[in-house]
Length: 159
Image 1: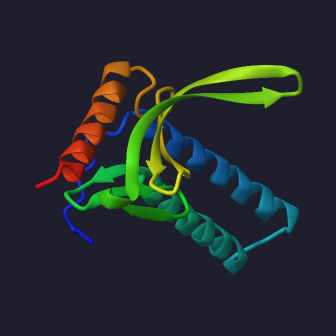
Image 2: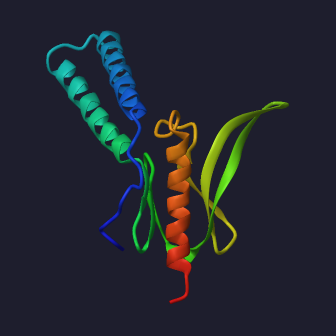
């Protein structure tokens, strides 16, 4: 696969808020763990270093999250795993209004970009109109969607 993956958008500033929130939450967890188990000396250092390492790895993954494209396909980087889909496996790129059910109520959660595979399955790209990258930038969301569609059309066009 290609090594020249490009994210067709700049990440939103909301990612930094998420990273800061996670730092606060892990600091609180560290404080609670140290107090709960009456840790001292090395125990405090071990807990602090372990949770700091978790935060660094998590922050790195949060910064890398997103959809990347190349001439060969689409790379979807999630928090826990990454997935590559070559252009020939993709039948189409679509927008979908996402809704969630909570008992008898339907809750609208915005528009997402889906990749439709040739076998009929769909793959969520994690591009969400209300997400941290596009919440206050709907034009950027539409532009990214159009960019992915254009690259798919170019890759699918007969030579």
